[in-house]
Amino acid sequence: MQTYDLFAPTTETERHALYARMRAESGLCRIAPFGAYAAARYEDVRTIQKDAQRFSSEALATTAEPPWLGPNPVAQSLVTRDPPRHTQLRALINRAFGPTGMARLEAQVRQEAQTLAEAAVSQREVDLVDAFSFVLPRNIIGRMLGLEPSTFTEFKRWSVNMGLITSAVPAQHAGIRDTVKEMEDYLGGVITARRRQPGEDMVSDLLRAEVEGQRLTDAEVLSFLFLLLPAGMETTAQLIGNAAILLARHPEQLEQARADRAHIPRFIEEVLRCEPPAQFAFRVATSDVELSGTPIPAGSLVMGLVASANRDERIFEQPDVFAPGREKASQHLSFGHGIHFCLGAQLARMEARLALEALVPRIRALRLRAPDIEWLPGLTIHGPRTLPVELLPA
Image (cartoon, rainbow, N blue to C red; front, side, top):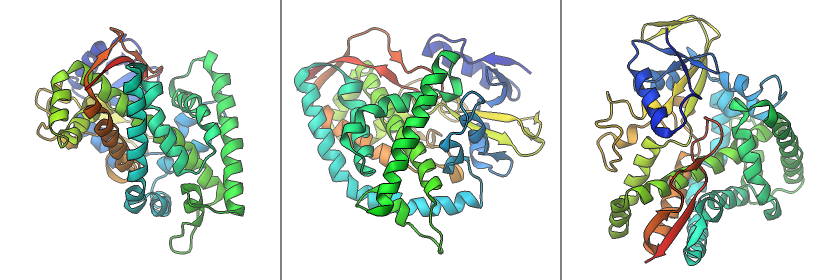
């Protein structure tokens, strides 16, 4: 069985070429540095995401608590649970995170996006991450949770450090440990305060939620906030940032979106397929299993390479071509599949759509000011760390 080093590629082109070689293998591969079995083809990745009986999500608990880190509340969160506890937790959280709440939030997102887009375009030359793509979901998630606005500036550092856990080098360990402690202290204090005095925010909704006489414990709410705060920002921030890069690289798409706002959702789905913010799905084999002819021993770490699956030529015609509105556009695996389909998918799509609806009509061109993109460190989260652009007003 061939072993591939995921850190070997130095460019996105090289990385996708590596994924293509992995998809051409007769079965699964092994990958460094994780030592895991890796699925690169669409059907195998979807199986790993969907089949909770054979591929347990408890793998995320393992990857969230490496020996150098110690206890991490994310390891006890919804995404690390299998049925029946996963079913119970999801039902409780859905009470605070369902369609009704998202509909109530849309007006706030639209207003925030309009304000930020106006300010960014007025500056003309900006780092679009700091001016728009990150600050929009940061402000929205902070308000959803009823957090103190003065703490919002800490969220980016927290988010980046939490995203580094699975691929951190020793020099980063101390900073990540400090982040976990800071988040525990701050979010634990928020939960205590909402127990005493509930408000109109998601933390209070989570504490009030009840299904069949069951409520979330403080520890379960804390673990969900540890998951939601970075994930609620990063998925959307990287989706908007990657969308901006593709608007710059494909000016005809900007023209089409300016002419027809209905094109924006199609554009967003193709961004999700081509440049998924979350690149991997981690699982653990619950027993000796076989996938695509490859035997996998019980207890083995298994990775579904989402970024590879989304470019599988068996599913998507000309997969390396950016083509909004393509056939099977929404069949990408960027938000998962099955019981762990991302709770925040509706919010991420809505924020990205409203972000582009605010930005696109205000500009006639979006130009990258640097030839090479500075991507976020690590492999798990994919998006620009900084994005110097010139926005030409319409």
